[in-house]
Amino acid sequence: MAADLFTHFDIQILLGLFGLLSITWIFSAWQRLGVGRELAWSALRATLQLGGMGFVLTWLFALHQPLVLLLFLILMVLMAGGFNAKRGKGIRHAYWIGVASIGLSTTLLLAWMLGSGLIAFEGRVLIPLGGMLIGNAMNAVSLALDRLRAEIRNQEAILLAMAALGANARQMLAEIYPQVTRSALIPTIDSLKSVGLIHIPGITAGMILAGSPPLKAVGMQLLVMFMLTAVTALATFSAVLLAGPLALRFGGEENPA
Image (cartoon, rainbow, N blue to C red):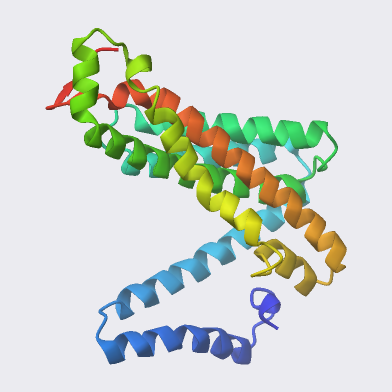
């Protein structure tokens, strides 16, 4: 089976997996989409990255060292901040805004789940859930920074008028903050509405495939979905609060806060 890919070499499994990918490659070649080479490179990267992650996680779980687990999560947060720095180009300190927003939201939610008994302080729990929190927070921050810059550009005339009348950065951005946060939450809320009716989500499917009882799988799925909803809200709101005054730039000049 596919789950044995990295533990037992089986040419049939490899052919089956890459046969799935070849469907897209053949379609790309047929329609001359020009993505065949990128698709092959991306698939190779995904295979190597996931395989590497699997071996690293196996090593981490065997250590039973809480400090090493926390350092690993911190490293993930620092790497996620680099992605936000690219997406937040034009906003000063976008890297540290990303790191602070992701780190704060992830820390608060992990602490809440540990303190309330929802999860155990174990590597096999903390690393996967922490990774989900960091990844979703990273995406939320990137979208928030993009939307924040777009809203400021769209409302530049209004914001300049408010600045001329003596408004500070907080007053100028008072209407933009909720707009950005609301737009970030809409996809998450929509997924909450459709889960269990239109699709079987990944955690549920994965746990069932691994042999867990369906009710146990959907319980974990509910925890994950509520957790990701919370991290999206916290990370987005933190990012726009931190980035807002720094994103107020008109005609190449930064607006005074």
